[in-house]
Length: 405
Image (tube, rainbow, N blue to C red):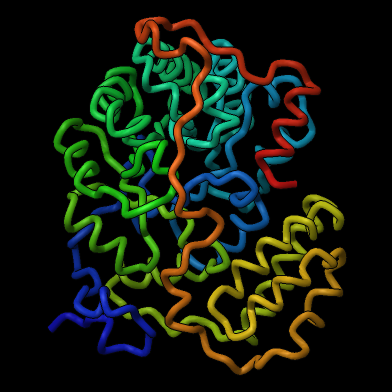
């Protein structure tokens, strides 16, 4: 008889009480070109989040494919310090996976060649970012609206990547009146992408409502390359349910791991047929936070590292008693040695709260009207690259605003 979450110690939401762990042979490794990824889990690139320190932490909890932050091609080529730093790796990071961002085929091609020469194992291109700063310049989730431009970008990456697999990350479309994901999936396959990832929301939805998993199933039936499903993977049980319901080849985990790097251990457990262990309580989480703060400070320097750590403390403590009052003092957090004293008045024996399993982190529930360049929709056959940040000064400001640092 298969084990279900209700039979183990893990504090579950009621929605997951009847989801069994994977049975032997139920799922196959995710195949992305020559890479076989087990469990079939990919960590979504997120600005200000998926940097090397946190990737290293998550990798220590479990296996999978862990992508870098979105790296601007132009910034990387011009040697912008932050662009180069965010694209960097260390000898223990394998496979090394980098997400690139850009709308000029020439820039993308040159960046890809440079990264391949450095030994990168996997490349992804961002056609899904819904942030107004990005779409307003005709980038991110605005790209698939113009099929010929998208084809040029994917083709340039694939040609210059050689044997290194290239994947595409996208959303369903701009809004409910401008859905693009089926045609975009066809283009990605046609131009040589090794797999395609779909977030089951439009750009106008941002992170509101529920992700449309039916769109993932539809894309899976529309293309022959592997399809990765993204959207609302809050618990390990969501990943199993998504794969069973949609037939997708793997899942992309985003906001669900913010302040919860042990989610990757839980994912490894359920895909290997094991019940996951009980999540850490506050005492252990404080230790995790200190470790995280030290890694960020070593990587970015203490000033920038602790500035980034403020949001992480908020995410780590969501749902715990008194967390709102704790967060109110984070603006004064400037050094690693100030972190542990923040919890002097907290009950460190408090276990991980059930309510924290599905609390949204980082992104709100609002919708938006997607901002596009003037006249962008006038000619959808136009494959002229839109102008993004071009000078080093523009790129430096751009990178700082997106990274949160």
